[in-house]
Image (cartoon, rainbow, N blue to C red; front, side, top):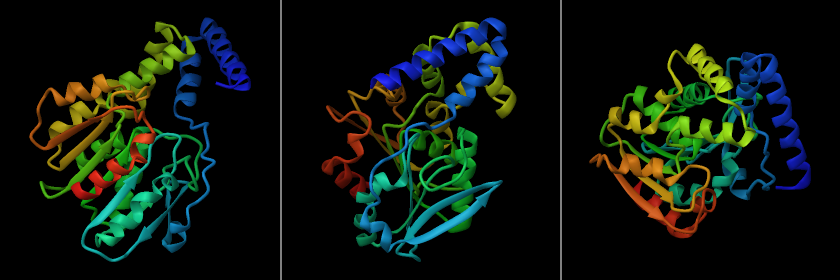
Amino acid sequence: MKLAQKLAVNYLRARLNILAVVSKRRAAKKAFQIFCTPFRKSKKKTAPVFDKGEKLAFQLNDITIKGYRFNHPQPNKLLIVHGFESTIKNFDRFIMPFVRKGYEVICFDGPAHGRSGGKTITLPLYVETLRQICERYGPVNRFLAHSFGGLAVAHLLEVLPHNESTKAVFIAPATETVTAIDSFFRFLDLNEGVREEFDKIILKKSGVPPSHFSIKRAVKHISAKILWIHDEDDELTPLPDALAVKQEAHPHIEFEITRGLGHRRIYRENKVVKRIVEFL
């Protein structure tokens, strides 16, 4: 972490903890806003392959959602879904292999990410975004999702009509929302009182507790065949959460555990790309 980033984090910690003394509810409200705000912006240049795609856009509430479509129309449609603080342009290497395979490829930046509008993103908002994409440009029968995108696709498939012929790949998915919140609170050194108010905010907004937003829970209601790829050295989406799902031995989920690739390099690794193309 750079010096400027350390200073910003220390300031944020101090500000939230001072606010918590005055009002735990107000501190939790501010913490929730921060939790839902992507701060890191991708500096990667847009790959030339995107020049070959058809630019798409639609309105979701007051947010403009932007994306691309390649090789339209085809019966097999693949939707690529990025993670938190990411963008669809990070997944350029997947586009042409699937086009050559005869697939239509659809990819959008989520709210508050990449070329799309908005300032914050929540899981229900991301799921609704994906549902709208499937409704407008589908039907989609193939999914490729990374990190937070994996959590979103799992919850999408709970409500999206599909069957055993549908396939999905989860790369280093954010398996448990509770784990992400735990990590966030440790990072900002916030106390249990603020956490209780934070959980109340989620319950009020969504109608369910944070524990509901769980791939482990969601996969029990999914028929699609899933390839789950996770790295031992992933520090952002911990492997133990994935292994807890693996231990349940769902017949429709196939696991592959890698080593030394971490959270982001994993989807850029040639062997991983090849395996995904073969599976889907």
